[in-house]
Length: 223
Image (cartoon, rainbow, N blue to C red):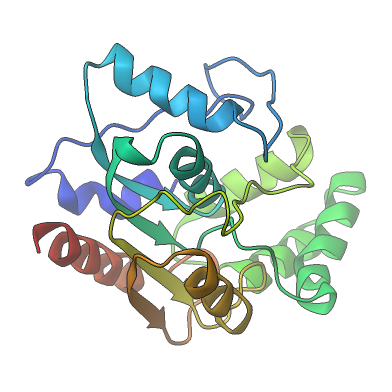
């Protein structure tokens, strides 16, 4: 679903989209400790297998936390990092999380459209713009044991990480609101060189915002 956000980069870059371990897909379903070394070691294994010394990386949502775990474990393997509506710096308030969490739990128990509508309205900027988004959220809530802890990294763990970082946040993100995330990112990432705040957007970006993010990343990586 989110890979589609970055297809505009394919003309200029080789895109590699790993199938995350412990998540729905074809990779191993065994989950690792989100705040241990497992995710970082997994990314290193991928780079080694592809004979890539280092790479620019994009981390979206949970993937942002995975990039930060990689930065903690193997900082030299990252050339630049784009963190888009990322996990990795904690979450917002309990109230904002409950906007999604409560109807999500209820939908898991009773699969009614009105509950799914509430979930989508809370986390998707334009809920009716792409049926794939709604279907993906519905399937995840019904069939996936959702993560309760997001990967993140402390300032001490990121001391050796000096690659440039751009952070993209959405104004109305219920999971990772800018007022909570940006100060933490500045505190933990001395190499944070750009923050892009997209007004009016929620966690799942609109098509227009997706294009804007692609433009931001292209400019950042090309600089």
